[in-house]
Amino acid sequence: MPRIQVNNSSIYYEWSGRGDKTLVLFNGITMSTVAWTFMLPVLEAHYRLLRLDFLGQGESGKPPETIYSLADQAEIALAVMDELSIETCYLVGLSYGGMVAQHFARRYPSRIEKLLLASTLAWSDSVNAAMCDSWIAAHDAGGFDLGYQISIPWLFSSHFLASQAAILPELKRIAALADWPSVVRLLAGVKQHDARTWLDTLQVPTHIIVGTEDRLTPRYQAELLHERITGSTLALLSGAGHVLHLEAPEAFCRAITGFCPP
Image 1 (tube, helix red, strand yellow):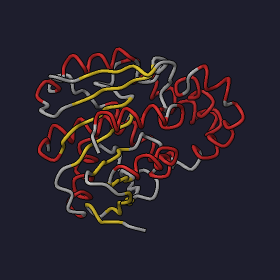
Image 2 (cartoon, helix red, strand yellow; image 1 turned 120 degrees about the horizontal axis):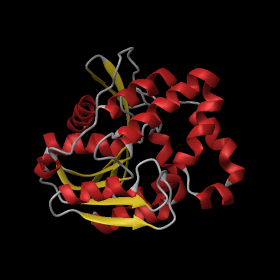
Image 3 (tube, one colour; image 1 turned 90 degrees about the vertical axis):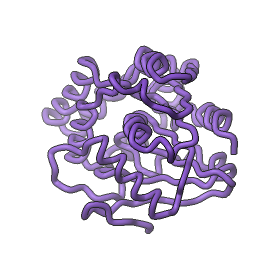
Image 4 (cartoon, one colour; image 1 turned 60 degrees about the vertical axis):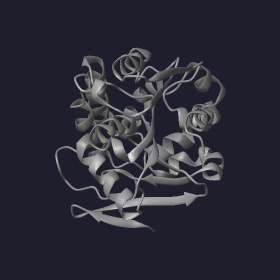
């Protein structure tokens, strides 16, 4: 299993695919490298593909700190890219990964050819902070079962919940694999996120996508990103909720390959 040591923590990554261009995928908050499975046949056919688990995710280290900051996660991604001699890439960040990607683009714009931000936040406003606190309170009160139950309407569209009810138990089983103390540390990093004052300094071609039924990182956040990032473009995925890699993998892949020529 490929790993590197970054600041005394083990960081897991997967390096696959074929193509002339490198595509780097940044995970959502409770995702791991495995979560991109539905998109891999298309993406691995077009790109050299790097997936990594950030600190606190999947197979990577989970040190007992109070917070995993987004800026530190950006440094971890840079270390993995350096290890693999990746000079430039297309960068795709989903949800939490989109926030890390903003910090990465601010610090290392020369390493990014194009940036795609999917289902993500420009800043953690009072609604997002309250949502994070409610998840933690629910888990404290009723454990994983209650925490997962209250997260469902934030994550999925109405169509997905109606048409894919049979797979929800399996999605719950997968979600239970996340290390909860680490999720709390990741959420603490999210609550500190506020890129509003420096989004206009980003000098990377940027495309933003969001589902029209995304309640977790809603359209107004995507519109703010679009407004502040000079020259960016914005596309809405009709009927999709937050978890685009599960609900709309084909549309997500089309957005990537359309914006990032293989």
